[in-house]
Amino acid sequence: MKRQLVSALIISTVVFTGLVSAQENKGPKIEIRELQHDFGKIVQGTRASHVFEIRNAGNEPLIIERVQPS
Image 1 (cartoon, rainbow, N blue to C red):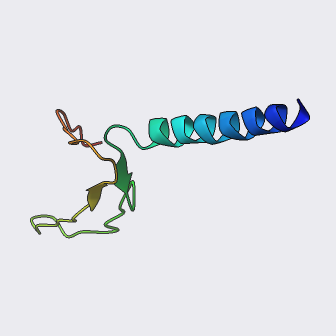
Image 2 (cartoon, rainbow, N blue to C red; image 1 turned 180 degrees about the vertical axis):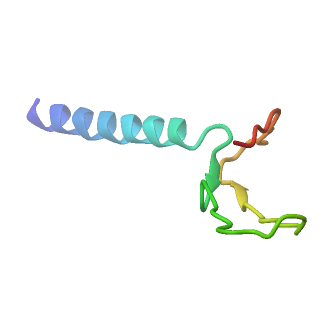
């Protein structure tokens, strides 16, 4: 009886751990290295640009529908 209980607990733990890890990896996941950038002082009329690196670390497509600069 004790052996069956221990086996059931081990199997339940393995199944539960698998379900939790499967849920964590589902869907898109956005990763952005830096959330803001300060250009400092820029002379008027000078063009300035900066590239923000955005990466999808998930296992489904990441769709960016709207971007709003601040």
